[in-house]
Image (cartoon, rainbow, N blue to C red):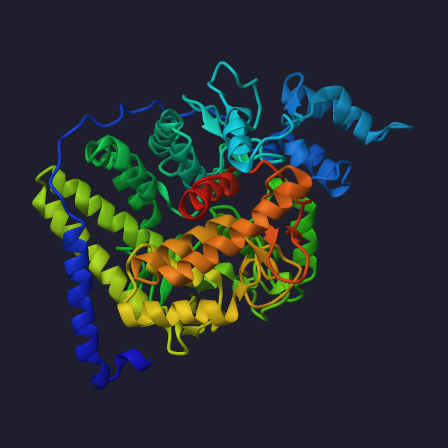
Length: 545
């Protein structure tokens, strides 16, 4: 690669020095605080695909509900084994109706209708929504054999079909909760996530049993940083044990994986560089999208279906389910190869996690730990700038199996800027690439291509706008930050004015504003992360509204 040439090495050395200074600047001494208490091991039922066996396969493959998530969120009215036995005895009887059987033996999830008062401003509407999206599901609140994982404290759900808390969504929801003065909910959700780390060793994709085999982009350290802005540096001390445990989850296998190989979330390149990928422990169709995954695998002749299922699940861990970022041919879902990709977003977030642990260790006066994690952060920043920098002028993903960059421009390029791992000249080049290739009339497109998938053009997403805006601010480009923020805010305002709601994603290209499309399910409203980012944008660019 071009970075390895001798002429480039002094430049890399200088950049490593800058990165080291940056990491050291992030380390501050602080007060000690007690960590969260250890939780007892969770006793949970297996995911619905295992709990109901052939009944589950029949329900999902016959698609008796429009949304595959409906059945996996349903609650059995009696012992699952008895229901399965009754199904086996009844399924071949004349006149057997599968849907009626399910309706008789399960309570389906409900989606409460939210009718806001008339005349609310956008800000008033979001403040009004927070209680409507808040859930309390302690062990006493969750029925037996539900797929819902109980949590000790209240949490905010995104809305619509998303009836549980989601890992990376929550960071952007927290941004808005702080703007609304709901620091209590920020603290509650941090404690819930710490509880999950203590219970399971990681934060699941969401608090459902069928999500336990994977995590999502690791924003926990950034959530702790948000809490520290209000509570002070003791927040770092409080959550240090869980920060370390989450890091251990993502790095499992790093010491034993041979060069040129991968173990779980860890990839070790041929030169010994350790980076990370998205992964899922299971290689079966997702419970919540079973028939869709089976169909995708059938469209991939010559591939082992288990390999396809694993790549689909890994993309779900990324949060970008689905996107041309993961497709071998850049356009077709059946060519998905997520586990072959070293993603720019994941590795940037792990740099932030390493730097955050270093800061917390410094406050404990544990200087060996501090030096260790400063070195880890420095090594990762160097690797990001070596392997995930495209000389065309942007940060991107690296295909470790093929040994080359994927060459695809996406809004994920902003992540190294957001966490301050980018070299300044490369940060500015990345911003110009985003400006020329992704910035549209009403915001930032997710990628440059249209595939019919929701994490591609013409859709724009609130979290990606915030990451890009903050990344631009970190590197002194307030003008581009304002363009990104104000264009997207205008889109959100226009949709709210016409429909009186906030939605999961937006169309940012073309003549008409509106909610985005594509993907496996209809457009959802609510909507947690859009609410959070919108409040931040209002405060930045329309404080009187």
